[in-house]
Length: 85
Image 1 (spheres, rainbow, N blue to C red):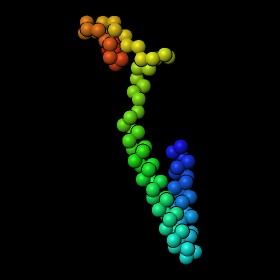
Image 2 (cartoon, rainbow, N blue to C red; image 1 turned 135 degrees about the vertical axis):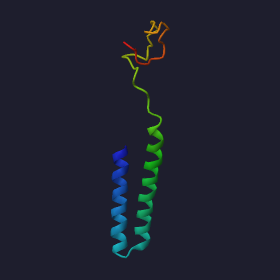
Image 3 (cartoon, helix red, strand yellow; image 1 turned 180 degrees about the vertical axis):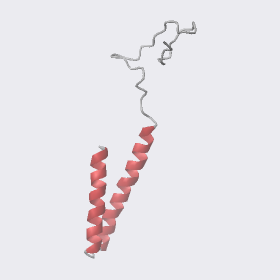
């Protein structure tokens, strides 16, 4: 989806520039406006998703099953974190 939106944004900028050069200013500015809206959507949507990524450190084949065996310090290790051995 990212590359589709990026392609549409680039096409909108190119079409808008060509229309402005051909003196069809209204349609050119509309096309450039669509390109700017697509650029803002890409930046906002994918910028927010960068922080919502899932932590794949402890994903097993089925689910995240923590190993509650005692860790090297003697306490149970139920946090899906790395073991110290």
